Length: 227
Image (cartoon, rainbow, N blue to C red; front, side, top):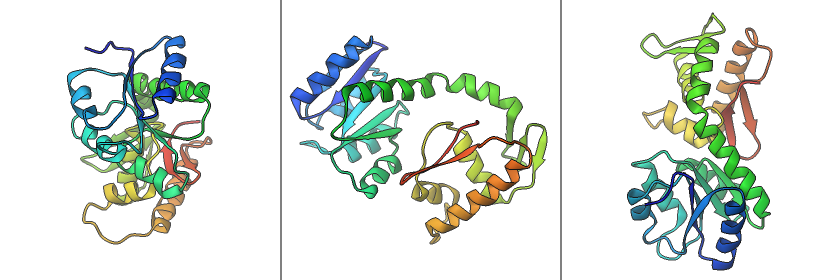
């Protein structure tokens, strides 16, 4: 069984996997490496890795399909590693549930820093949720949001948008992912419509709180983080 600090590295380039493992071990983690996608999901089900570093292009089964399968039974942090630099490839990783992505070539130190950042978000999630109870309250029965004690006048779509982002602070949601979640009837909606909802939501929240709450992530989407 994997230890609580085990990082699963799924990378077919064995030299790169070994290099990442060395740096992560130096940072205090345990590691386990798999070099093709065939047995990744089974390994994750049988063990308890703290985080998965998942290459996008793998023999046997690609990273997108693996990520989708893992998300069917687990919300453990997943960082996608890709040699593809196109925006759509990055968005695809986020759409299927990856928490972050790193483009090759990269510095191993950057990977360690990203791992620590994602784990910090995940392990501090409960504490953040507790501290946000006084800051932001969401009543899904009444579709009512209260920010710092002030009731926000939101549309149904704005409420669902805020709820989705706030339930996972720090996680980046792509526009297509937001569309899928806030429009379950699968109507045709453009990215600009999402941007418009975010703009209106920001304006309403700015009347109560001076700092930024919903952040734009270039070429990726939006995230909730109180500043």
